Length: 273
Image (cartoon, rainbow, N blue to C red; front, side):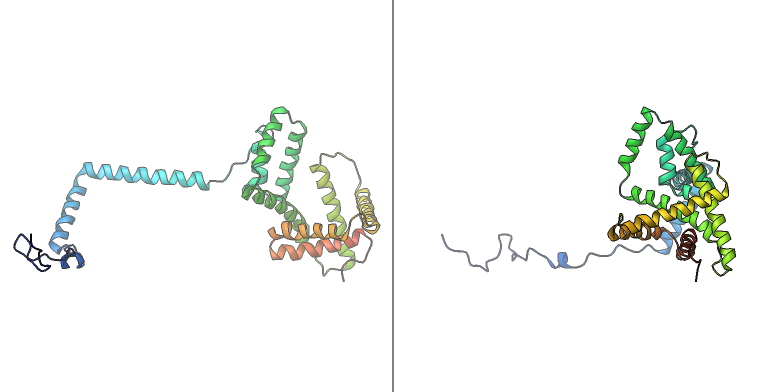
């Protein structure tokens, strides 16, 4: 048996070519472009199909259903949350609306305070089933829901303070500013009584005197060292970083001046510079 030379012809009588042909390596041929005649034929076919009443009705129906489904889907996603009945609806639904929706924030300050008062009344008459609902609600509060809860509660405090601050004129005379601050404190005192379910029959003078006494007690607590500097810093940090971040620059400026002068008035110090 003799060896076969490396360059011997193949059994078919033709030399063995490369396993990778030039045709394989070359770029694939482009699909032939449609000629104007072909395009005209397609348009004519489509036009003929559209001319048939049955085709038109089917396509119109399909498009109408698609648009209708899209509109319904968009409504379900972006629809405003309806305000629940605070006297009859389940407590978890009331907490959802109050603490976890922007719709609650869009209500006026007075409307929100009224609803919170109704919610307090419901909590006072809470039964065993309500406790289960609230436990389930609390278990959901994490992540984005917790941020929304903090925003809703912060927004109410900011809007309430700004309700007075927006009308406060720090450039008015001292007497005018003190009169406005006293009237604002009395009004706020009444609102907090209503929110807390209190039915105290107090005169405006007694409410103002109560504010003076509370401010004096607060100073005594601070002077006694019951609240450390670190604790005070945490309180101010919470008010500034958690609550204050939801206020606009104009709201922060107005309310800071108003609250500063309110504190001075209640402590018996000169109001403003």
